[in-house]
Length: 275
Image 1: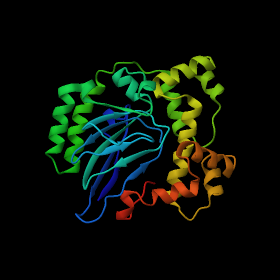
Image 2: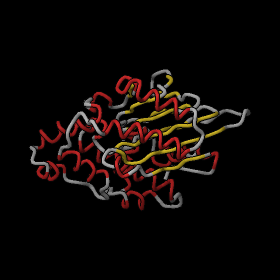
Image 3: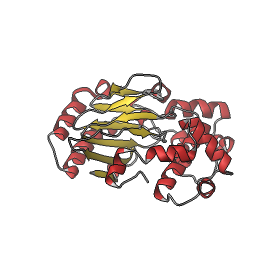
C-alpha cells in the first residue's frame, strides 16, 4: 500500500502543488471499504492507472470516473468507491491553475468533474497509456510531468493578482479580511468576489472556510489525542462551536462523528491516515 506526496519538478511548481500516489491492493476476501472524501481546497487532475473508481454524490447513484479526470473545487462530501487493485496519480493544482491552463471558468466545475480527454485529447490519452504500462512510481511521475510540461508552456489565461491572494488564503493560519485582500488586489469587494469565483470556483470567504476545515480534519488525524477546542484554536477558529458548525455545513456530521467515519477509510486498513 502506498499513500505518498511527491514535490513536482521546479518547472511545474507555478502550476502544481504536489503529486499524490495512492495505491491499494485488497485481497479477494471481504468487502473493500469506501472512502468518504471530505471537502478540501483543491482542483485536481487524476489519472486512474488500474481498475476504475466510482464516485457518489448525495442523492445520486454512484458513477464511474473517467480514466483521466479534472475535478473542480468541492464543498460537499463525496463517497469514493475504490477497487481491489486501486492505483491513482492525483495531480493537485495550485490555486487558479485549472482556470489558467484550461480557460474554463472554475465555477462551472464546482462540485463536479469532467473527462480530461475533452481538454487535452490524444496527448493525455497517450500519457495515460504509458503510465498504465508502468509499475515504477518514479517513471510514472516522469511520464506525467512530461505531459504537464507541454501543457504549462501554453497557458490559456495569464496570471492575476487574485491567484497570489488565493495562495495566501491557502497558507494562512488565521482568519483573513476579505476586504483587505480585495484592496491588495486593487479591486472592489464585488470585483474581487467575481474574479475569485471565476478562477477558484467558489467565493473567497467560502474558500477560506474550506481551508480551515481541511486543516482541522488533517490535524485530528495527525494528533487523535488532541481535543477539539485545541484543534479549533490552532486552525484559526474562535472556539469549538465555529469548528462544529463548519463540520455540520460540509459533512452533516459533528467533528467526532466525521472523524469516526474517516477511521473506516481504505487507508486505515494499512495503518495510515491523511495528515
